[in-house]
Length: 188
Ligand SMILES: Nc1ncnc2c1ncn2[C@@H]1O[C@H](COP(=O)(O)OP(=O)(O)O)[C@@H](O)[C@H]1O
Ligand SMILES: O=P(O)(O)OC[C@H]1O[C@H](OP(=O)(O)OP(=O)(O)O)[C@H](O)[C@@H]1O
Image (cartoon, rainbow, N blue to C red):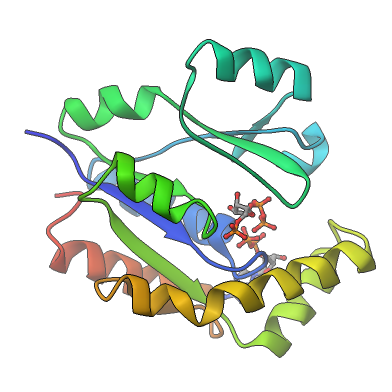
């Protein structure tokens, strides 16, 4: 039996990492795995949810075929380790922190993946990015501007997309994510 890939997307600052962290135990209890991304960001800024590497190391890993999916966005390289294919083949569902820009390529490789879009009001988003204080003010504006190109097209392109609003308390969003996975019979 093959597991299902759940591709979590949403604007920078919408809460993807927070949601994955908060739902980690509940997901593990349902046999759903979360993969650790490889990112060319500093170790301090990647945290536990990602492995920080240099651009040279990233390119070497890419050349070795170490990534199932990889993309470049916000001036950074992101890689999803190829071990997810083994997990899926073993029947585990796998949740990944994906990219809206890379959605067509991800869909081409995993046609049956389920896409979950995390949304947040734009004003709340700006506030959260500023409070997180990971990027410079200029980079925050660039990330907010990047959203504009995605907001319209996503739903039209993928009518089965699941939309989760994270403008309220995180626990509520965790609850909704778990409800969706139950309904979708994923991570069972
Ligand atoms: N539901 C929420 N309510 C309040 N703050 C939140 C919520 N979800 C996330 N945050 C905060 O918003 C900021 C961005 O969240 P993060 O998980 O880093 O987003 P992303 O991974 O999508 O960029 C963080 O400072 C996080 O603590
Ligand atoms: O095509 P997009 O949907 O804009 O996504 C581009 C990248 O930005 C996010 O990563 P990252 O963790 O660096 O950003 P964030 O934590 O600030 O969201 C997301 O997870 C993608 O890797």
